Image (tube, one colour):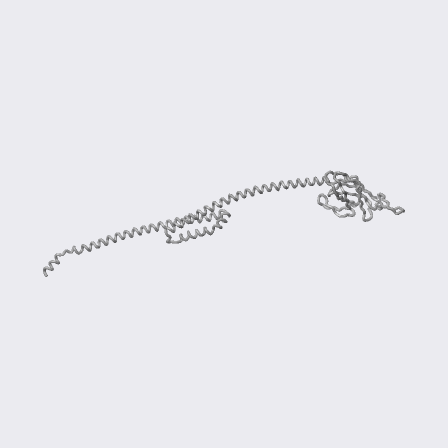
Length: 313
């Protein structure tokens, strides 16, 4: 018993505490290392999140700049707005994809890179559209210039045509005037028709109004080298002492476009360049003749070509 107690007294307590201290030391070292790793990983995660946030902000800024550029392009011109309308589907598709990534709070770096690539694609499309619009504008400028030149050319041709038409009208007028015949040797006779004892009618020129049965107008037509051969209509106007055209047979058109009544008409056969002699026509009064001056006017193509007077008592 005493020997056992002596043996227990002989065991040192350091042999017991040593292993415990070693275990505690190892655990402390493990915890320290683990803590450092956790802190390092946390710092790396925080840094990565901060970088992702910065990248996302940068992408948002670039996207907003692209949208502002798109709005500005729409306001630049009607052609640009029209072009963008035709490309609206593909532009809106890109915008929707980009906005989806930007709206995702947990967007990864890969998704942000994809969004950035889509923004570059959007900007590339807008640059392509701008080049198309520049080409369209240049084409429009060229077309406008060609249209202006064509308008000026047409205006010049119109002016030339107007001048030519005016010249032609003047020429036609000159030819027309040159074609007008001229009456000469005009004679106006007041005829009294009488019957002799044998019942044969006899004509006698008279100056007494009450005895006049008809007025005979005789004249010649001078030669004209311009007027073409053919039948020519001559309108004859007999004026009463009152100044009115007597027994109007109808109306004819004067060279100025106005209409004038006539008493009788005479159609003659004319040969170009030759004189027609001995033309004669009669005008029969519808009632008793009045005293005074009677006048006859002869017209061809609306122009007055001769006149004569006779006074009845």
